[in-house]
Length: 222
Ligand SMILES: [Zn+2]
Image 1: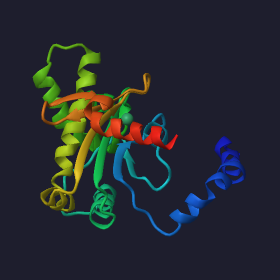
Image 2 (image 1 turned 30 degrees about the vertical axis):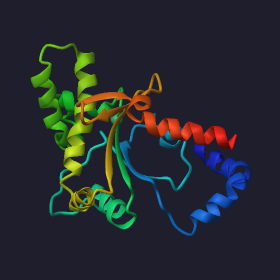
Image 3 (image 1 turned 45 degrees about the vertical axis):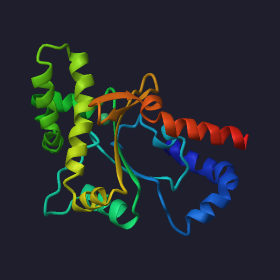
């Protein structure tokens, strides 16, 4: 038996009873605050990082947190984006990359991926980000180039996201916000893209106003 099967039993006995009301409420529908697109990497725990409950994030995960540009054939990402944006009408979309990303290492060195043809082809959706890094920092060391690639890949996938008609429509209406994040597995840090400054800053800085409000609310409740 895999160890996580015993986890299900523990969930049913210990965790579920404490949140029974929440689960009963969720059985009637969902109204998530964000479509959260991140990498499949096992080290990313979205609920833990964002301290959210079930029902708060509509999550799409794939190798490299990639959003293929809109095309006329159907794919899992395209359908999920359309559903979240046009049907659930999420007010936010987050694309969240992360440090130590195997997919981005592959994108940087695609010649090592010959035995993984699907991975190789999938990562071609990040090729433009690799090219931007080559252009901006041809002589930088490997660590610096990888840090840049994680950020440039998030920026590129935001551009791809905007080609999806459901997203373009909501952006035109002005009731959808797109966020680009990079999560640091080792430190727990999360940086967020500041579009105006074209740079990544800490979440505390990027969302200073919202964080202050949330802390105020938390203190009032306590
Ligand atoms: Zn990854």
